[in-house]
Length: 339
Image (tube, rainbow, N blue to C red):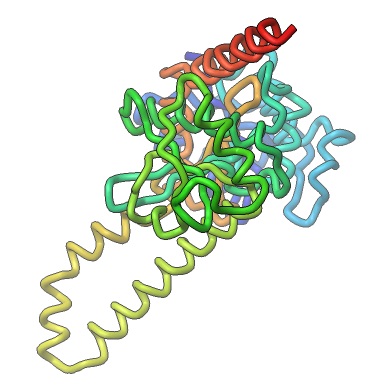
């Protein structure tokens, strides 16, 4: 496969974390192309006595910059990374930098897949049954029913690959399980998902179903999805702080017990750590684009590159394209039958 373009300048701990993670990934056999300021990246690579290809880009979109700056700053590392994917010189682009700029660069640089009106961010949420794909996790605050239908198709394609589910279940986030519950968007989306070929629609689900893992895919607008994502992340941190306080502030016997359960707690912490996936896909663009957290460390970078490699090798974009084509054909047949 072509190398994965890594925006080595975007993020709080870059370029050190980017180079450290890229070297770790390269040692696992993942081809990586660093994109950024050549002299800076060469200096970081020298610390590892390791060589990786570098594509020079002398501009960086900083966190305080506007997402739309990518249009006029085409030599920025994130725009150059997307350009390499578009030209076929890279198989995917991964960035831990400005998420809005990464989304904008993907849209400007790669374009949308045919039939996709709104690309969406997918978030992997650890649940009682494994993982849940939450779509949209923040790209589109306001949506129409057709957008949620597209999120369901794209999320299903992802779950088939990453969760090994031939027919993943899809739930529509609402305030009640019964059909007819929810706001206008949810009520109008329900029959649309029910009639969509190629998805296994479960029905309405509630916020509590996220961590229960009631369905493999949860579909909602980006505003609601981002609130759910941040709530789950925050709740996990608070819960672990409570456990830590309870195990360290209640006498010797409790501390001895804490030592015994420490390995189990470490396993749980790893499962809940968003850095385990490293980067989340932007679904619906005509290429592979992945967005990581701005505070990502080297482990998150390495895992983000792993995720990108897996998606490319499994032809995720083509699976989404096929799913969209089925719906487009259905829409054409419906128009013909009514004309």
